[in-house]
Image 1: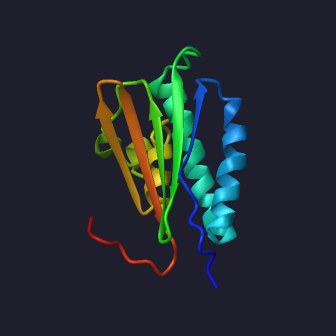
Image 2: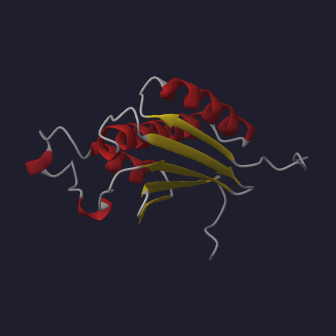
Length: 148
């Protein structure tokens, strides 16, 4: 029998400091576990989140300690949505070249977005005047995509 009490969204906001990634991992890990994702899916989801946070801090906020990163976890019965917001200008994720093409194999960047797209069911970037939000969605196994 499923737990009748739904999990509520959780938002964590921190300075641009990579040391906060470990704290965010604790919250993400517990949420993923309570949503009954498999261990393999949970590990892949966490790696995608970790990559998104690192990108937000390094590329979005340029490691500026005075800028903030916000991570919102929105658990739903059929999926987990994660929004990672920074104060940067964002990137067009469709323009990031495929790192598996021969001309890109030795390039040191571009693999994170590719990995996120392989692991998550949906990866999108939303831009605003205040910054950029990476939206990651992972549906639970057996769940079909529903129209919004």
